Length: 336
Image (cartoon, rainbow, N blue to C red; front, side, top):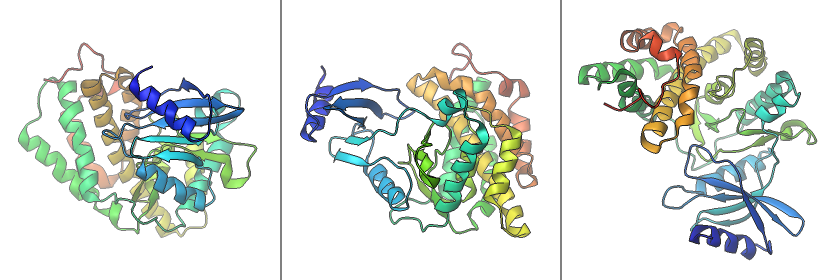
């Protein structure tokens, strides 16, 4: 057993879970790792977040707020932030993606998920949650031209083309920040939501992976839910869920939301394309390349908004259509 695993086992035992059996679970795009813990008839989840790479404080802070609002964020049984270990409530394995494969239909799942967002957006943003502001939004889309586009094209983008890209985005995104911010969980999608049908109301949706939460636009998590990089949500469900979210809103508010939905979606999907490229080129995580064509489809849908004409024209001028349709492969997707 390596030193890190031994430290984790010691942490679990110190929390009162004697003689634990610790089994690895799948990881995510970060440096965090997860394990299922069994001890004396109990079951929990161990989060291992190396402190030189990850900070568990935001997870603890946001999780406490979500539980205070009445949602199913995992309880924390024990925490050692200095070592980066958390022992958490085990909400089970029924991620939305899993539930959908076992016969649960989209509509009840997505209705429940959007109802959580409607309720969440009525709460004040907890103190200490960082802002999702114009500067951050611009930094995130620039990851695309720094990492992914050069590997797609086989050449580095010119300084002028990069500046034009940034200028168009900066102008287009201004309306995104006109409204008061809400708490955005940032990665609110089918692989971070757990179906808990035995619970009631809003607690039927288990919440995971919210440590990157920000104070940002209300449309952001709605886009995250419906423009999922890992699965296609049916067009009928997308229309239904957006209408459900906007139920009772004025026509002006509905128009404004649909505009910010397109802006948030375009920004988010451009960021994801950049991050997926970086995950392969820097971290050798090849699986994300296969998801890129779906993200391109989402982005192209968002770019139909008149508010994004200049950005759409830039993409059309610099990214050939064939580069968007097929997943890049290890042989051709190479940094110049």
